[in-house]
Image 1 (cartoon, one colour):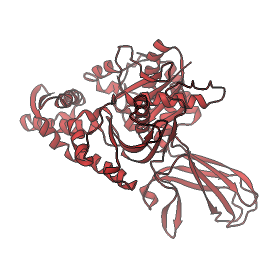
Image 2 (spheres, rainbow, N blue to C red):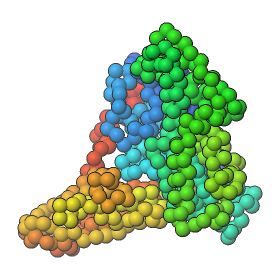
Image 3 (cartoon, one colour):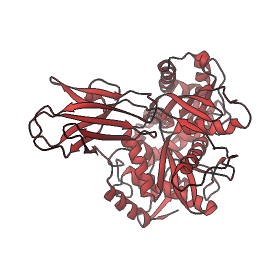
Image 4 (cartoon, rainbow, N blue to C red):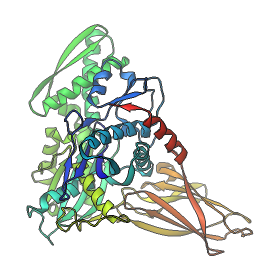
Amino acid sequence: MSIVGIDLGTTYSAIATLDDRGRPYTLPNRDGDLLTPSAVYLTGHGEAVVGQPALDVMMEHPDQVATLIKRKMGLPEYGRTVSEQQHRPETLAAVILRKLVQDAEAQIGPVKQAVITVPAYFDDSRRKATMDAGKIAGLDVIDILDEPSAAALAYTIQTAATGAIPEGAPKTVIVYDLGGGTFDVTLVQLSKKKFRVLGIEGDVRLGGKDWDDRLANHVADQFQQQFGSNPREDDQSMALLHAAVERAKRTLSKVENATVTCVHAGQRMSVPVTRELFENLTRDLLIRTRLTTQQVVASAGLTWDRIDKVLMVGGSTHMPMTARMLREVTGRDVDRSLAVSEVVARGAAAHAGIVASKLANAAPLAAGSAIADIVEVSVNAHSLGVEIRQGEEKLNNKLILKNTQLPAATSRVYYTNKDGQTKVRVRILQGEANQSAACIPIGDCWIDGLQEGMVKGAPVQVRCGVAANGRIEVMALDMTSGKMAKAEIHRTGGLDDAAIQRESTWLMGLKIQ
């Protein structure tokens, strides 16, 4: 059985594994491409087509194709029907995962264990949804890993052999990760056999898609002024326009001029676009990434002279404006030595090898393996807290602060508010705000089985923890009896085991191409 690392991306996905020396490499799909578009075409006849053919179908039948699925992770529904059926984001993501694994198995044999990457700024509900997608796809998801951490791990392995990161001389590195739908910036300290995350900032609603939308709206405005009809009112017209915009964006990364053609209501218009115009249309988006980058350095108590290297990750960093902005902010050239669209999957494969080697009955890594003895240290992207009342206000009582080294756990004592209470509800939150309404509600933790006959004000100790992969765990102690109580988080969304099995059964009956 082979193990793999999977970069489940907003616009493109990739899968990687390890060679016999523990070095990660990317596996091509059936068409020979290292990247697979994250698009799913459901035919309505028990078949699904994933990748570029799905994007091609979207030009004619946008209602039959799902894209940008990653942006919907953690929500109860994808948001619209696909081939006249409602689907959960986890299930659509599982179709992509199944396709990646299916193509990989044709080259390396059966695959069961996998590590799947997530944006560093994903909260618990989105992380659970990603793990559930892997389960629906029939995978044993042995871990999830933050995307910038995966890139840093791949970089560590890539440079260790060259001596670029000497033993005992750690380097402080910024990983600027601008993907198709999400943005993360992570501060990492690297040495030859260890990487330690120092801080994380990000935005799960900012990515290359937002740059595309700005240009698409500009062209649609031009078209509407010329012909009096709005292409934004027709799904097929917008599917064609977005495809043209993405091509133009790629062209503008190489040359100064491009043309975007819009076809709608029997009319056709070609709009010339310069790189300068594109950059002006999206200047505020770039500023958002700049401010986030500055924030992560300031939060760590560092200055730019303490930063040794700036790594760029994610397909959207091909836009020249990103490298130029980072040079202005950091005062140094960016490092482009990584294959920016493949490095996350490779780092995930390396992490999969490290995790798998620690499982029961696993064979130890060979001494010469590229991943032997590597130590990984991460931090949490969001503070973890519980909701408390102070008078009429509901507040966020923070237990584990943002950027705390993981795994981490802490305990607080809470008190029953009436006689004879046998269970306690604790609302779990993620976020930095003091007001609970401004935080991300993870779910209600019900603590059941408290000793009968307890009086009002009886103490219950609640232990909240964040695992190394960012998932939240809760335990409780009935301090009156001294016994552990049952503590279970009832999340605001997500799938239970029965629902995962149901979705998996549907998926396994699907023919995926």
